[in-house]
Image 1 (tube, rainbow, N blue to C red):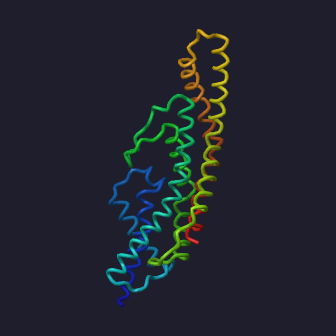
Image 2 (image 1 turned 60 degrees about the vertical axis):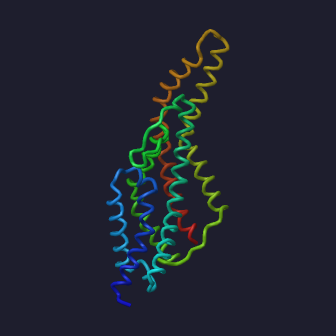
Image 3 (image 1 turned 135 degrees about the vertical axis):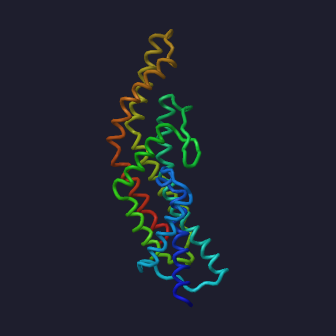
Length: 251
């Protein structure tokens, strides 16, 4: 087989594993970029990894075999996307909890990349997690993780689907850690609810709903910056958890 054809096949298969991550996985979806640019980045990374010797060259494939291998690589990329999606879903859930407590449950934002409605505080948490990911060279760590996955499952190889128990365990830990990110704001808002409830019992004529909305909004503006500052280490841990669990899903 022509070495050039083998290199092209390997580059394409590597790019097909990387492309879903750039297209659908936070924090990359938090950055607005054209789809063509994401595809070209995936192809460039695939060619670079195939040329560097990090990735084992794929066996010669026919047209049908290449199509089947390409579908397998897309599935492998979707598995990596799943790890990031679960991590950021936990972050959005924690932010949504704060939104409901503070009375801002109806206030949603529109993600310019996915056109999806996202919670107000959850979006703030997610943006901070994305900024922490890139600031701590998480994208370089992700390339190392890709290299590990290519060692475990070479391009075009069939991999074993991870057990639901492993995914469930990671999801539980991610959601528990994410609730710790918003724990300070949740506790402060809960204490505010208790105080407003006591005031409404001593002064029944007071409109507890209106007072609570105003008081908790002002409290959130004070507590939220402190919560974000204190919980930055937990956001870094969530990013590290997402990167560390990916090789385990391919093992």
